[in-house]
Length: 476
Ligand SMILES: Cc1cc2nc3c(=O)[nH]c(=O)nc-3n(C[C@H](O)[C@H](O)[C@H](O)COP(=O)(O)OP(=O)(O)OC[C@H]3O[C@@H](n4cnc5c(N)ncnc54)[C@H](O)[C@@H]3O)c2cc1C
Image (cartoon, rainbow, N blue to C red; front, side):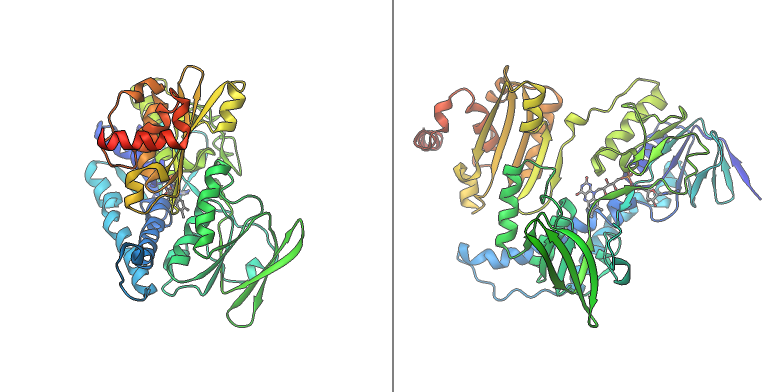
């Protein structure tokens, strides 16, 4: 028998975005239904951020042992037990899972339905044997790995982010198709965990980031033994013997191939719009996602879309940011608009690559070239020297009035450091605001202040003056 519900809000998808909307609605005593067809927590918890960062952490430990002799410490040969790495990754997921669980959300007052949801008309969603007619809908169905139609790919057991973390044996030679953030993070982690790794990228690896900073990261990953083939478009994949696989590609200078044992497909994401009945709901969409305005409302004014399915930047913190914007509109009837210029992002390679605001290129276009670019290298930072983490750079773009338009950092701890600059960009801070704050010594975050104050004294960009400044700072 079909039951009928008439909540204020119906959320489809219990990932980063949907969970945040449901929790906020319940906290304000609003009647909310949350529908999830698979695992609570969505991609981030089960197949994305959490397992990938746990695997990167394992790789870091292996690498630290290999680097230890430079500090006068020898720990012997690095041995990786990949099954235990798998167990570590799964136990991290397990430690976080209760936060996103059905039980926790029900205890908060959220009506959780475990079924696949679909619209049957502009006002109604069906999930299992429940029919829901809500005042507002929030679609938060996320995205899935895009698997391109490469001849031969379907004949092999290729990996995606949904299967990669199930492996209990290390790949001997992992071929990663796609040199974006996911591809590069996983390439480096697997290399550190003992695999041979080749990345095949059709254009430029880490191509969405500032090329100057991306190059620092890529050089380091190459130095660790990962082969990165750029401008190499995969043309086909073939099985080789019982366990082998060959990936054929074309580059400007001719065709080539690489032989390995496993293939990870990481060439981008497709919004999860199939099967949702969006046409019946009058919700415009395409493969990139549901079409929304800056207020995240779709062509059906009852329906909002947030997170990966909204077709913009695909990050967990963006899904959370979107959740806040729709909660503001639905619960408090206050206008809210997304501002993509304030969204930071981090690629968790080593060194990390972080960015917020406008890139040098974007800033130059928007401000007619009237910008200044400030840089400060990690090598000039005492803490970076002590930690032997001197590879890296901060790059800051400011307008004529010293307003901070964008910051990119490649280097150790960049993902932590970008927080302060996200605050600066969000609030339109100027360099004079940074000039007055005192960073504790010795911290790597000092490089940000050094870059900022170099604006006032172009001389400090000269090496001998930089040396004097360091001396005075330490002993003055
Ligand atoms: C390998 C990898 C690493 C990543 N690392 C990071 C990182 O370090 N930092 C970061 O910010 N982001 C990272 N991301 C991106 C991040 O995971 C996503 O941006 C985030 O999960 C998007 O949240 P969401 O709520 O839009 O979707 P999801 O979290 O994917 O949730 C969508 C949910 O909707 C459910 N669903 C779909 N259709 C239906 C339906 N019809 N009915 C009911 N339920 C449905 C799905 O089962 C899923 O649970 C990573 C992604 C990957 C793949």
